[in-house]
Image 1: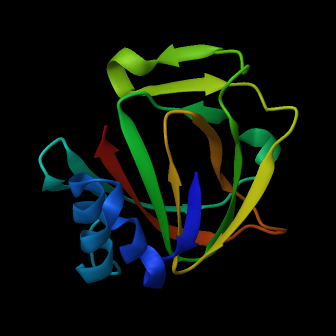
Image 2: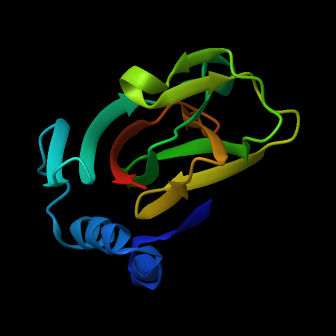
Length: 151
């Protein structure tokens, strides 16, 4: 897992060409004007999901993991908590990997809360369980871009 601000995202371009493409998109696109939904960046290798929602109480959300893609979750506006924990040792309670590249897990006994505000991002790899869209003290309207990077 990586958490940082978009101003320092160029230091992660070295992860791979696909990550460089994803971060270049986040640094150069007019993210506030993108319509909600899926936007292709490099076919199925790198694409963006534009989301708008109101954050939820953490206890109403579930931990999730992915196998084929890493997530770059970038908060354009608003604020949220994303709960993070290593996937190792977490029971898989719902397997939707074949259809949607997502699996769900119960809460981790030891987890870390990431407080993301506008301009910040977090990268989650397959070994990273995460619970996004959680309230940071109170509900917040969030506009977020999740860039999916094929591994």
